[in-house]
Length: 250
Image 1: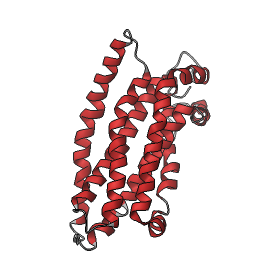
Image 2: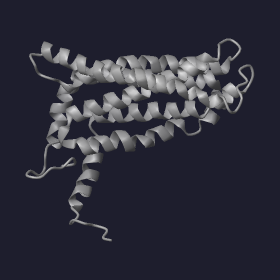
Image 3: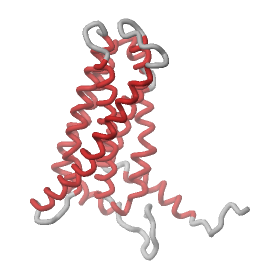
Image 4: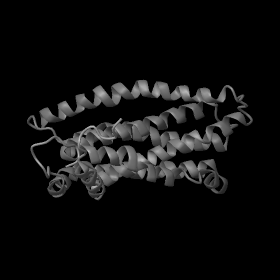
């Protein structure tokens, strides 16, 4: 058995690393990077705390029933596919017709307001239901868990399509930023969540998560309006460096 069947092209690896860290400095890419990483981190924080909440009074879920809360994410996925798939395509086609048949990547950002709105609501609701369990039904936890998952999925799908449309010559590095590098942000936003809850309470901790989610979402407004100028400025560092061969990195 041979480790390499064909002669490896080590330049692909070099350019992949170089261009990955390079495009992370682009304002629109860095925003998507932070948004994806943060929403993933909050989703992890939800996943690591719901068991403690639902198994304690007054909910008293048994250990073999508490994990059924994850069914909420199945319903979320069923909603997200048509909303952020076909729905997003309908919006960009409509925007392109209004723009004389020209597609602008920033049109991809328009559907993002829906999942981000649900994310802010979900974080606040989860914090309140966890902090004051006697005031809200257990379904508040289930709804919030599924709703914030929609926020994460929306950030992921919209982020990927937006960056691939913005920088097609950097498709590979863009996917690395969203699907891999975001782990650094998610780790930072979810690590120490137990201590955060201990000091600020569920309402304080998840209220902060809601505020940061909203803040990151609002940054999308100037990205939408000034995105074309950003792409024009950064485009000089996102063009094909070699021609005559297929490559996702350079």
